[in-house]
Length: 284
Ligand code: OGA
Ligand code: MN
Image 1: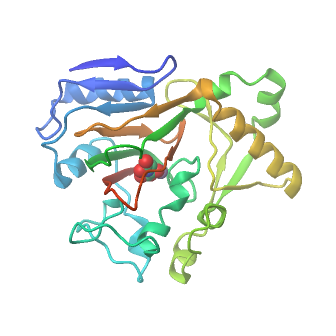
Image 2: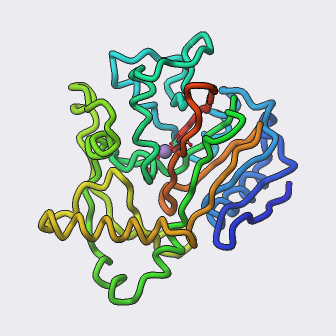
């Protein structure tokens, strides 16, 4: 395999590696080092990888979380295995969903900058997103490097935020995105979670840990809390820290949620299908 860095700060591209075949221990070790260094990896040309192979590969990096849609009784699941989140605008028969279909509305928060499952405890550590069907244009995914964003803060800001704790909730990002509110069962199963605002990554570097799920800084007044979270988010998602991934057929993208944020971008959903499959390793 070969690994090329696609952005000055982060984001590696892995070529000449077939993930549909079992990997050797030394290959897994190389990939573990690569994800620690680059924070995001795109594996090219994985057309041969099916759902089971994706689940097996993801499981090499830790225990898998179940999709949160297992907590909604009003939402059909297209994909059989609970480890798979359905990131698509198609139904069980492959047809595009109607614009007002709940399954589409529930994906609206992904258009806001976030890190996966920060409203859960444990949150998501690694996410794996496989492109099965891509629109001919649009539907890119943007990534922000939260270690580089942290490094660029001045010393007094780094000192001020060093020990802050943030409450994250799915309810906040759903509201912000204009998506359906939490169902009763979701509210019971997904009450939110608290995480440090600055997290030490295994690479030894510190990273900002933010998301559209970030509701408030614990023990801070509402106004100041919101102002600081918004300012840090604007900083971290400014141009120098962002890489836009334009998907190619066969791409599998793996990212480290502890030190990146990401967001989906628009495409012509009224014309095109986009079918992506996601697995998530818990941050235990
Ligand atoms: C996700 C996500 C972005 C996209 O699957 O967690 O945010 O572009 N996806 O589909
Ligand atoms: Mn996401």
